[in-house]
Amino acid sequence: MGKYDNLLEETKSRAAAYISTAKLYIPKMYNALMDENENISPEDARDRIEKDCVGIWSKRTILYALPDEAKNREKQKWADQVKRSAILLQFLQHQNLELQQS
Image (cartoon, rainbow, N blue to C red):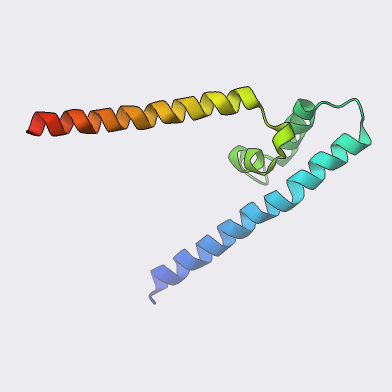
């Protein structure tokens, strides 16, 4: 195994540890906020965690690690639709290219 492969493996293990720490701590932080303040909404708790932890983890990692109840379902549905549309568009472009080459 070469130097690059060693660095790649080290990077992968650190990235996995990075995400796993988010998956460990963010739900605990969310539950602590919910327990400490009965008037806080899931959206407010999510916003607070995002604001406080953005220097530690990326926003995407934070959202990934949040409990489902704290996630914005409408945004998730919209993102899924955009993703499906992009995949469909890419497929259609590929089909069109194949037809043009025939």
